Length: 254
Image (cartoon, rainbow, N blue to C red; front, side, top):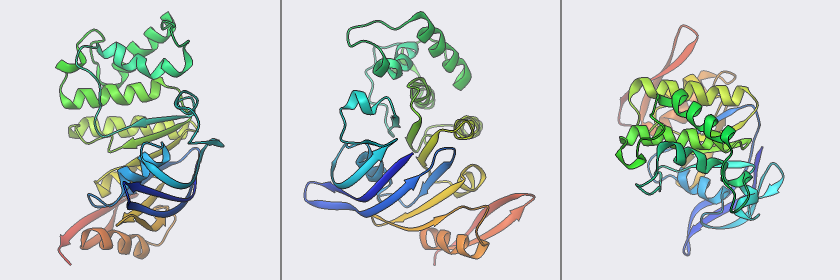
């Protein structure tokens, strides 16, 4: 579970995320929608203490100000960019997820190495020995997602995990993420496609100019409230049903 209490985030002296109080439950896939620059990545960095903050944040009752190694046992963070060097194999990139539970100067176990290879197969049939730097942007994203699962943390924070993926891989990745939430993990992610959000997310947070203005469980709320939230972000929209699924069409500017 991820909990924030009056969390505020800053870049220098500029406040980028205003007082935010949230509780993200286990067993749910919670998505954040907002325009570019609305504060989605800022919220994630604030939870993980990557930027200056005020207020409180807890992950499984551990304050996010805890030492990084301790925090890594309870939360895995997937940023928009991998931030890995080029001279590392796909296997070793995934194994970095196990760093928090190995001795500081210890080696990875055979079981860890087999698990890393299995995740690479599961996420995209990526050759374990292939140089990470030679993979496509989409393949690199799949490796980073596999690394987050390798970490074994109960809480996953993912910043646009589908940003570099093709259409089929986007669905595959979201199916895998959805399965993780069904297994009881707490998953918080940002995305831009409202139809993917409607299909896969149990709960949606709508963010604008550093403030969350709506918090909706799509399958439980009235369609008019959901449509109004989308309209504030995107302009004129139409929410409609296709079978058991909700879909959104864009009708143009406001």
